[in-house]
Length: 181
Image 1 (tube, rainbow, N blue to C red):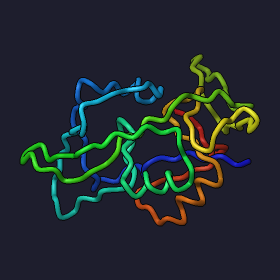
Image 2: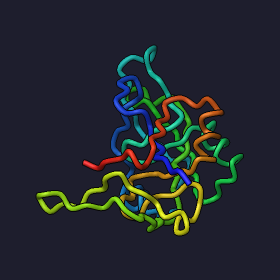
Image 3: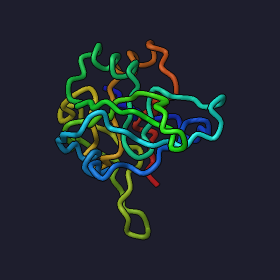
Image 4: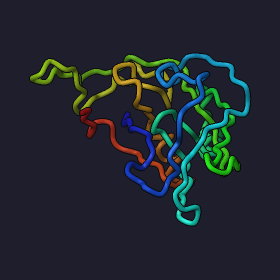
């Protein structure tokens, strides 16, 4: 079984910059899959330099994972049931106007399933290099990796479904090509 990393396309200067997160959202707890209840919708401020050039991708992961309605619907259609979604309104910090709707996607649980790929670099820091997942331990088609919780891992079925949907601003990288910094 082949596995991939699902992420946003890095380095796009035209996506809105998300400002300070509300106090009720803890980035670490979101990544770790903690169960939450929020006042809805969650409102997140964004900075927009030039509205005519702004791109709203189907996924944003800079601080917390935000999924477009198209991506959420596609994952639902593919049978993914381990994501708790919460509606999010992105609003322009200057005008207060709502500029986009997304979903905060909290992926339940972390899966400890690396067969190989954990190394210690010369400075003594643990790194992940060309990881291989033990598919017998990987419980699910989309999950967060225990050994590196910021990574969202998908299998080939989910990868192909996302690619066929023509979603924008999404990066899919083979997991075995990954090297942590």
